[in-house]
Image (cartoon, rainbow, N blue to C red; front, side, top):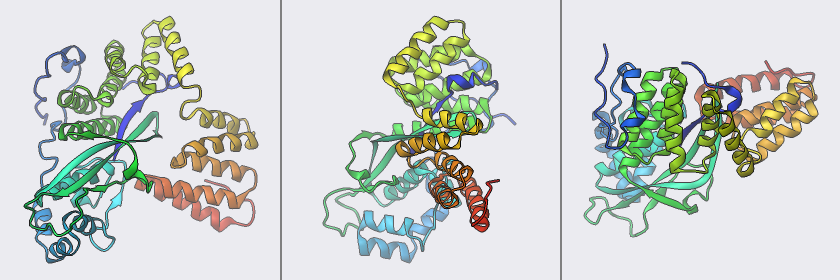
Amino acid sequence: MKRWFLLLLALLHVLLAGCASAPSGPAAGLTALFDDAAFPAPSSPADASTLFTLSAPMRAHLDSPAFKASLREKGAARGLVAALYSKSDLQLDYDASVTRTAAQTYAARSGNCLSLVIMTAAFARALGMEVRFASVQAEETWQRNGSLYLVSSHVNIALAPRAAGIYTVSTNAEPLVIDFLASKDAARLPSRELGEDDIVALYMNNRAVEELVAGRIADAYWWARAAIVKRPSSLAAYNTLAVAYARKGKPLMAERVYRAALAREPDSLVVMQNLAQALDGNGKPEEAQALLRRIERLHPAPPYHWFNQGMTAYRAGDMRLARSLFAREVARAPYNDEFHFWLGVAYLGLGEGEAAVKELALARDNSTRIDARERYAAKLGRLRASLPGSPQVR
């Protein structure tokens, strides 16, 4: 599952930005972080009460002969996974652009990792299985969407049949870990157990981020607010709420929330970067510079460091240096499609068409968005068609 944080890097500066009822009041101690009057009511309620609810088609799927046969043949957990994720059944498509409820994911046959975790949990609970969520200590993945930098961490799900489960056939006593991470060793990585409230808060924060990406600042505020009320320890939601304030033109509130987030995780690169920017914009340059020096000590080469240098070299026409810098970023973030794409562009600028084709193929294969995969595929097709010769990426 991908849990999204937002980062506005200092070089970007702060960006400017039938009614539903507003969410219920905040828990004690959080009031100072919320400014409800600054935002209109959300376009639809920031509510997750139906997050795990099965739709009528999902219940019909549970009762289908093929589904029941899979459970009897493979046991509850493995039978469920086979029934949901085999290429011959639902044919789910991965798309990181939208986080959906269980019913929405089933209907769309598409979703990001969190959506798939939620849908799997909904089906498993309907079958009487025990469901456990865990935060996995995998390396964070950074991506960029316009002016927003997105940082994802990882959650998986484990299923275990209950003693009285109707379909308990397997004698394997260990829970089955279902992980949507690419690594085959994902199940062996250290993890921390999460409760259902944690998952709900992650869903709410994802929705807030998606609203920010779409430019719907008010909806982003209400979703981030709801996530904090649900799980006051959610660092991601604090950071998202602060970004919403910054985009709304409420820099002092943004600073206040960033400070609250940093108090919970003092070494967070994401929050330190954002707070430094807020401090500078709020007329506190000395405090901002002190925080930037601390960032440099803790993170001398933060994510996108070599990529940004590579873009500078590319714009200056130094393709060899750009290729070298892009390659360094690819080496430490091999699943970032943007890095592969620009490394391919640099190869193209050097006349190395076959290497460019390879990198564009990797960009396509590592993209987590359907629209981006389609764009990369189109560019790749044109590039392949132009070889040999002097290919140009358009």
